[in-house]
Image 1 (cartoon, rainbow, N blue to C red):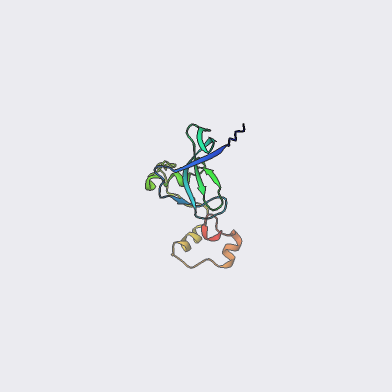
Image 2: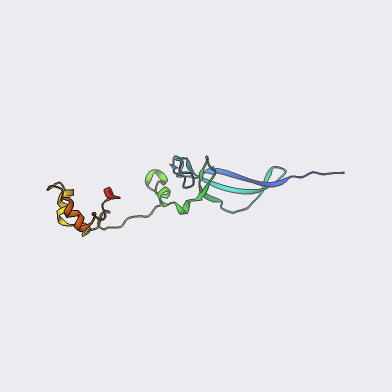
Amino acid sequence: MFFFFTCGEKTIRSKLPGYEGVVCQCHNCGNMSGRVLKRRPFFTFCFVPIIPFTISGYKDISCHICNYNQPLEQRPDVQAMANGGAGVGPQRGPGPPPGPQQGHINPQQQQYYQGQGPPPGPQGWAKQGPPQGDHRYG
């Protein structure tokens, strides 16, 4: 008498509550196809899931194009999108608004950026170098 049994692994995926409509960029292939999923791998016996390999499962950002899975803990940008933008991402405390720090450009260049004067000539920037901290220059 011969008995044939099959054993293996099956991963059960489900949407993570609070992230149902979130679509983000995959950090592997660059496509906007990342979805937040909860994965639970199971040991299967005769194609029936029997024993879970983890107790709570994995919370991942999964790309359906390249099948890359990245842990949700490594993506604070996606955590901030939870529950329609009221997520658990890092919170900003009181302080100055983000932007270039004071002292990176000289007053003549500051007046130009604010529209209060003519642009400095080539000799003006050639002596001082390009302005620092301005996103338009790279």
